[in-house]
Length: 247
Image 1 (cartoon, one colour):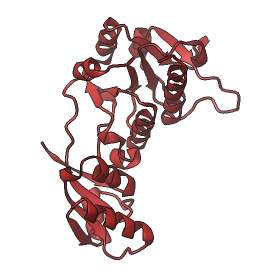
Image 2: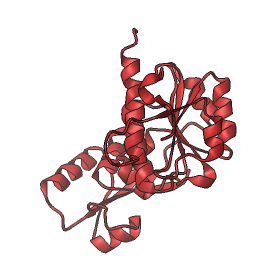
Image 3: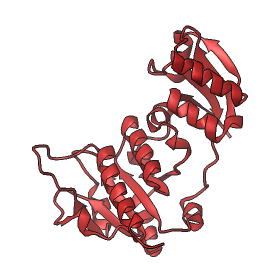
């Protein structure tokens, strides 16, 4: 299993909580001695993590950015489910999936993973040729969700969506031109929510593969929302409907 880099307080703290033994070493800015850093170092010591004093130059070289907050960890990659089928087979409730078509910005992906974790989505799916993979920036923005939400990059997105249909999962795409509102759809049933990049939206074939298209009501002057914001609205509407269902 390959090693990876995590940086920032949130991402590294989540790994300390969920899988401390997977942490090989944590580099911390030796010049930073504020309360947040002291609390982090105390938590890392309690978890038995190896701490290495470093300077800003070393930290930047490790993670490739100056936005490390003085904390960079070298960790073992977490083992996720080997396949989407394995993940779905293990789901004991109504599946809730987020499908991202054409999301290439790591900040957007990280934010989408974070909201997917918060709403209890079982997986995030993206095409291999129109998507960003999990990198250090994604992990930083995701604040630990890159380790908790399975992220599958598939060769043929339309084929994968058709395979989800065979599992009786409703494919709900978002489009500014849709006649139905998001709030008109039953999202308490098994569902995959499909969102495209801001502006360009879903690719044409992806849109044609969806069972239904819905729009987010827009009352102001702007024409579209950032994909992570739209993902949050869609996923939390699904969660709201599911919480109303009797146990």
